Length: 484
Image (cartoon, rainbow, N blue to C red; front, top):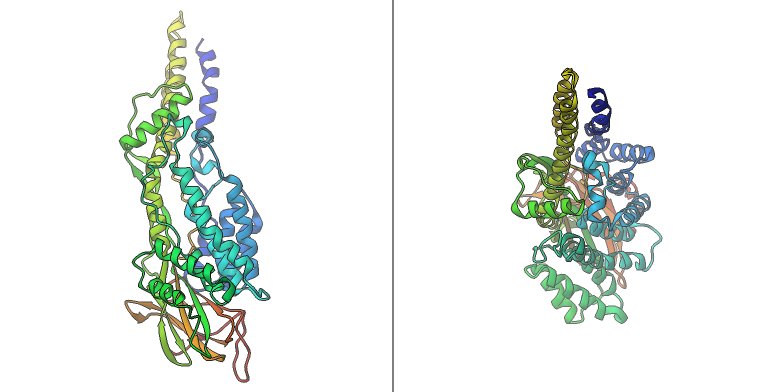
């Protein structure tokens, strides 16, 4: 009989052995190169990782897009982000029971469906890349992407906070959770629409919407007042909009937590749906992720025109804060899933041990040594099974930490624009210079990426020009040796 119990315990042993340690992150060398300012190396490495494919390729494409933008290649960035967006959209709608299908291992066994802020920000970055891409005349695609920013975020937050029949009328996230909404999409639409007298009303509406989402933003208040007055620019002036993609967004690190009462209640509901009982287990040391933030992000960008400082970029959307609030709001749901996995693993282990013990009791001859060893072995495997679970650390880590902007009115013609990262109100890294052409009848856009406070700032603009004696290669502007 012990031999039979051995056979009946095989499925459990196989399940335990399926829980493998997490593979190393292939994107880490990309992040290291990007953070060091070696943007060409980061782009090449990211391209190679994406080419290898795999279930997480859409996560790598999010990172690849930032690397492509950093080497002044907006079209490949658009391609990467569109593919990532489409895959993320296709993964939305996973129900509670499907999520628990990862109980044999952990959440890394599932395709990464992305946080709501990542779904939102990929639209914002698509709009930014459209404004920097050549041969785009009217900004229609940029407007479409920017309009989706608020729509997508609202829809996903509604999904998180809605009452679910499968959870006994509860929601995954409390309906009153203090999410922070992204105002940057509304600003982009307002910037594009304000130049056309036939669409200025939409510009006023969008800047008002941005101000509703960021009521304490003095710069947005000034922009709203200017638009209400009906003034696009001073007579004879053109406009340059500098869009600053500042810093690197939050990244995930492993953490261990104790289940809260809310998480335990949610886990009980999920377990009940599967017709299981909740065994007595330890609710401490549950592996989940937490957000961490870079300490060498710039505060802002200083912008100079023709050698004169004209201002610093202003934060319109603090992506770190958007992510932090969402991550905190969804913590109980993540802890509940970790608790469900532990409950199922403990229950499965104990059920397998019960099979062995029953067989030992049925052994009439007392030859139960094999059963005793198998019982001990299953207990050890059960402990290992739980120990191999890891937190899901996948995320869009190269996403800018802050989306900033500055609007400058200038005489039409060619101007020298210089941008440098700021930390503590002082330039902290090398400045980058670009020649831009300013038109009197439509705005120009310059996209500036500043991943750290000490690395070069790549600049992109379809308004970049070549003039006699000036190297204004759009694809690789050289860092200036001067501080603004």
